[in-house]
Length: 482
Image 1: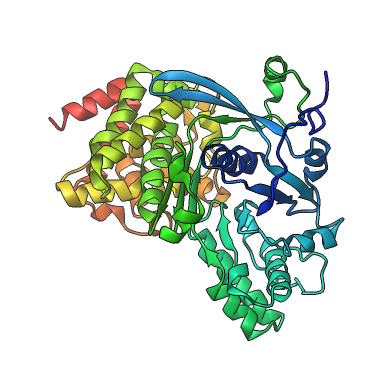
Image 2: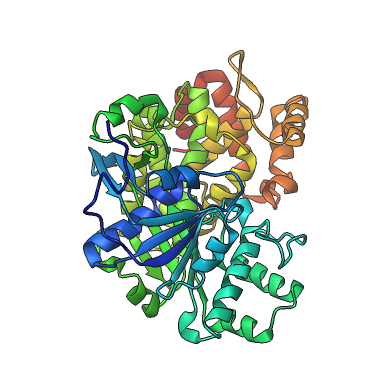
């Protein structure tokens, strides 16, 4: 079978470089490069992508062997039905490893039609390294590399405002663009770069915070023969992703004009403030994940799909989200419910085996960020307890006992937290355990014993859990509040 490259596909267009992308991994290829492919197809965007390898070891050489081409397979559930699609992504013009060809990297800054910088260098990538210098080829950090890159462009185009770039990071940290800009300004100061350059960065370039959402398992090594069988060429860079796609970018009418995603059917929102979308994702998608882990594991489920498909646990989590989380959020109710329905479709995806044990990591801190705000908001709004969330909280506390029905549970948290829970579960009575857990300011940043009725409800739920198991325990717990 012939290898995938541009000789194999001689009809492919030569695209001008409009995008420089820091990162060549699965996510960017299944998300950003796919999005620009759709823009090219549906909006005649005519954008080529130059990929920069952000660390010394990477995949750019393999990407260049295939002339930037690869196949994206999307699998999932949409409106209750299975969908499977594939697309040949063909907009990557070149890949550059700046550790081997630094001059080629810097030459990208001189591309006249360049408009955008995209990145996904992992959450740790947007960081300041005080050891980076202007003379390094290249600096260690991604922001250091980008500072040099922008300075080269500033000098080459003599500081013209038209040469400024639109910078859209996709790293999974809140306020990712604001953080990146702050670090670039630190390098400008550290390296003694000119005030004119700083002015150009602040006024000619724009930085846009983002929220990205798509599960990308990546190269389907366990099922590669099945995927290969759908192609008439050999592709070593196949990437698989779920069907769901969401990209929220902070921006104005100018950015909407630059990125005409409204001409496509992609779920891209260019909005003045992305924080409501982030809150929606954290409270609904991440909150559902975090709430279901201890409940599902104590119940005997192994995967997310098991949990949402089960008649008891599935109904429990769905009710928790629709009846106790969504009412606490300020966005349009219909939009929230549509998003939640999409989330449950994603949870049911038969092509992704998401182990509950793998998302049990750091469940205490996750509960604080993802679930607890919904509980506290519900109490404030409804003047009562969200009982399913309370029961899920009790399951979390019971999970940190470490054993259930003489079986070790997959605790995966900071050793200090695990050790502390061992001590708390050794206290002489359950009431003491509950009150010590709820009163731990380090865990929750507040004393939850002050939430009216919460300590008593948690203790009651734990008693029913212990005596009757998860399903019957929940029924009896709810009966007490009828």
